Length: 408
Image (cartoon, rainbow, N blue to C red; front, side):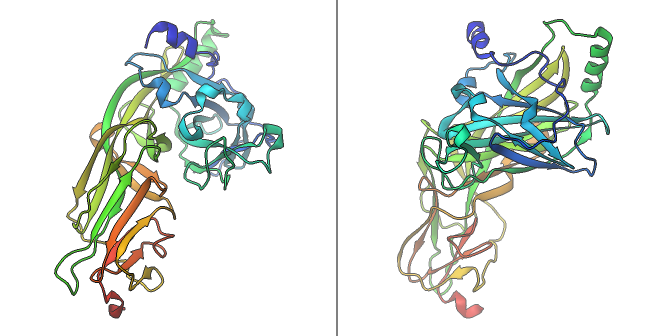
């Protein structure tokens, strides 16, 4: 990316945006809520300092090379209010220019928390969807924020649900770089204009991520196994876990970012009879360094796009056992059963990136018309069971052979 383009995109990244924000106000926010959160501490956050930014979508950052500065939009500190150890992030959609709104209305928000009372620090990232509801938020033109994993549609169509995400953050020991920067700031007094906080891309890694699972039925009273498959179509979205390092080597999971597979690729796995199937796609992660006045405060890792690669993993583990009259349907007719709705699929260790950062990260996705799980039903394989509820409502589904209900 050339310097001219970077300069044009950098508008809105105010000076000393990082850790100079005033403590969050206790007053109720008037803008629509983007997400809420709770810290793993009993100490009230009324004196904590919050910094909120919006990322440019992946389509704008795809050309970044290592060493390029990443344009980010700094949002008002008043966007964050607190109550005890909980916080609420409310953002006026008018404060987010159109270029920061990605495919399907996705907006990526980064939040930093520094509590000077306990000298603790946290960073998290959360994707939210800009949606439209005519019946509410008249002051914002009907525009509100919603969880990407909640039912609803992108801005431009009325949203069915406007539920916002809830996050949990870990307040750990404040980074050494933060203390160094504060000492530098105190020594210099008011920093010169050239001393800004900035985010720089410092690397990238591709990793395989599990986005679905299939469990075809055993032969049972027949001679063949059942068959299952999945689709991942153009327009589908996956939410990938993000990570934070405050000292450069040890990483921890923190937040997530949703990636829309638009103008990309579509794939339908061939029917497969293996008892435990893991469906994977390859995702690209960018590594960033955040510094103020030349002092590195943290390093973060976020998913930005899918590479277009997919594969199937046949795992050696035994299939799950979800057989229960409360969670199963029996004696289904022959045909193709396809899951397009229900609880979102999630996998706490779905992103296989431990070789890079020492830990795995999470994956989650909605079942939609373009992101499905299917089973071939016939006389020998006529039952389905969900992991938590009946198949239509569950997040994972297993196929069983005929007459399995006789084992209950």
